Length: 197
Image 1 (cartoon, rainbow, N blue to C red):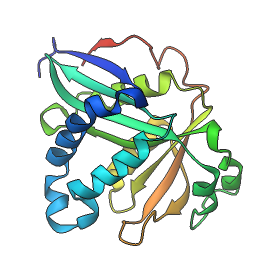
Image 2 (cartoon, rainbow, N blue to C red; image 1 turned 45 degrees about the vertical axis):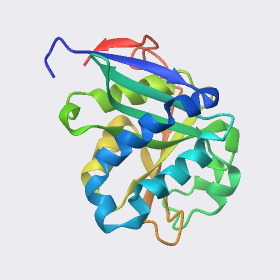
Image 3 (tube, rainbow, N blue to C red; image 1 turned 90 degrees about the horizontal axis):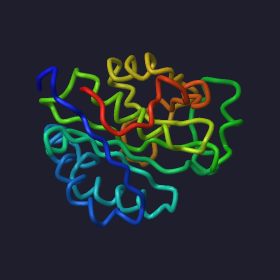
């Protein structure tokens, strides 16, 4: 990728899920190829199950990033449910139960960038574009506890850890993190869909 490369982002809703489903699966298969070899939780069939469940939510939203017509990454999520927050494990922040408000919390389920385009701000741009159109006041995500460098990235983006979670018996342990979207809804979160990567 050169300094002249332009990242174009496109928003998709649940009505477009069938249209882009295979592209999302293909990118996942590439990005998680190594993990899928040793851990069934990260296999393509398991991801496909999660994807289908997530995009069946009427609040599902996805942003796909492209450079020169090639998909370089994407992010998607859907509103959290109150039940998800009731099931959190170790509570790090004393106000974690406040987050059990469902429709006021957007859960970022996946964000990934293909290897050749990492380190150039693509993930942040896709993330910000996704969040720029959300009506919720906060966003959440789960980050693997065994990946401190990824966790540090989300810290820099303004997320803070509030609890731990293991969403299924064969899943890794995650830190649940929350971001206040209101202060970010300004110059740092542009709504335009084309920007220099």
